[in-house]
Structure formats: C-alpha cells, structure tokens
Length: 162
Length: 104
Image (tube, rainbow over all chains, first blue to last red; front, side, top):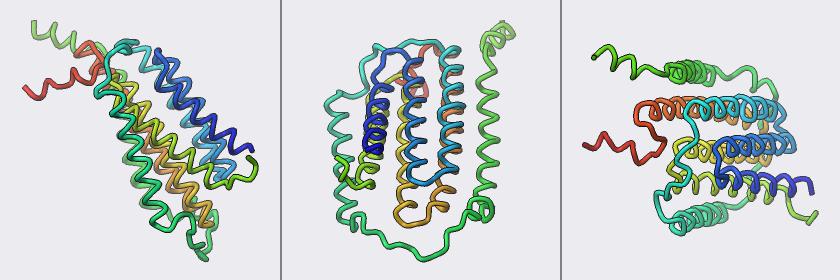
C-alpha cells in the first residue's frame, strides 16, 4: 500500500513541477519529488543511495535552483511550447508503449537471479573507474559554479571596449 | 490494491517520471524548466537501476551505478543552470529559441 501511495505522490509532484507557472514553485515540487524518490529507494533496499538522493537531490539541487532563479529571474513562462502539446503527448505515449512492448518481448520481469555474491564492499572498494569519473565530474561542477558567480562580466567588457 | 506486485508499481513510477520528464524536454521553452525535466528523467533512470538491482539480488552493484548517475546528474544541473544564468545575462531571455544566433 505504501508503494502505491509513494508512486502516486511521485507522479503528482512531477506533474505539478512541470505545470506550475512560477519557476520557484517548480523547484520546490522537484525537491518533493526527489524526497519521494529517495523514500522509494529506501523501500527497495538501497539505503545508501536513498540518503545521498535525499541530501543531494532534495537539498543541494534545490539550493542551486533557487540561487539560479534568483539571479536569472522569472520570465518566459507564458511562451508557446516548441511543438504542439498533442504531438508532444503523442510522442511520450509512443515512447512509453515502446518501452513496455520491448520489456515484455525481452522476457518481462523474469530476470535470472545471479548467484554471485553481492557484498556492501563493492560500494566502497572496486570503484576505481567510478572515482576517476567522479573526480572529473566534480572538477567540471566547480567550473560550472564559477560560471554562476561570474555575473556582470559583459558590461565590464563593453566598458573596456568603449 | 494490496495485491499489486511491487515491481509493477515501481515500473509505473519509473515510466511516469520518464514520461513527464520527456514531455517537459519536448514542450517547454524555458531553459530552467528544461533542466527540471532532465532531472525528472534521470531520477526515473536511477530508480530503474535500483529496481534492477533489487530484482537480481545485486542491490549494492545497482547502488554504485545509481550513485554515479546521481553525481553526473547534479553536475549536469549545475552546468545547465550556469549556462542559463549566462544566457540570461547576455541575451536577456531564458527562451531556448533565442539561442539560434549561431545559425547566422
């Protein structure tokens, strides 16, 4: 029962996140979605990822969104969509039904249980490639934050040229 | 309602997150809204990893993959938001259709 409630909450919060008129409200609904996703992770037994999703997805990303919306301002919410809404919904329905069809054709949920041992040690050791990748990603993230903070540069450049 | 199998409910959740995110990517023109759609999409993907790990009995392996996906997704959000802020400063708008100046 709790699974059904969490799944319904995730769907409702996701729809509210893309439907709301104000960007700030969208960011808050995204945070609520993230918290519910973390709860689902916990229910599925992935405890560590649930904690990280809760702190990163619902915490850090929300702070970043609020910061960016404060700098960039709210505008452009009443624009016409890129493509007609029925076409977009049709494409989404086609994609989802194709996924379901391919899942059923590929054997459905009758996955073979692997007998290999799965110890929590895999989470802390055996992750050299992951760690290298994440070092690179975090470096890129630092550069991104620098991009956040370097506001007002075009005006100074224009003044220098003038 | 209590008899529904858990994987089915989680798959419904995954598909709903992916569908809403995909629709947001297709239909919205606000740059920050596009990043919100991307976040929703990637949350669905991470949940699919965890469900796969849960079904095959390898939750820890799935957790390592989901962890990498979450880190990458956060960095994508940071860079996308920084890009949006810079675009707003230079072009004065968040409309992604205004980003077609490279075509000229």
